[in-house]
Length: 250
Picture (cartoon, rainbow, N blue to C red):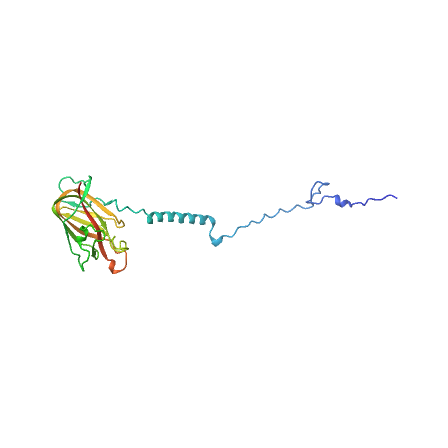
């Protein structure tokens, strides 16, 4: 008796539409296959509603602003040992001969006396404090400073070519920025000649100005303008000079 192998139905050898064509022939579909819909696209949600590109621009602007602010705030301090030159005199009168500022070597010369009284209520820091070579003393007048003056006297006619001073109160701790600082000073000599010195307000060191040689027995200092106080207290409404030196040819 022969054994019959089980017969696999013929439909298993037919290739169904969409299956691999390795086996048998592919029967064409009775109807055209519809086009597949496009694959869905997904957009990542934005955090806080700020597009990434705009966020990068904002960060760059913040970095640039921080750099500029750092340049303005953290400026290197000017050493006190190197005087800063004031702008050239903005007004002169009666100066004879050479009008060019002296540019040679100089030495400090001392005035013999200093006289002057503060307007209004006066002040306890008298002008003579500028001549005692004591860094703990200075001259100070309450008020806006306009019209305040000091007359410096020399023992003999003295040839001057410049001067330097420290603008503001650098003696009392914390008062330099709170009090007023001088913007302009008029310097007048015994022959009637004069010049006006402009001062910077954020320098705690010496500010120097040069002028043509002039022989004089006195120098009259007169304040023309000053800043507003940096603080709100009435005690900081004042102008000060912490030190002064007159310069002669060396």
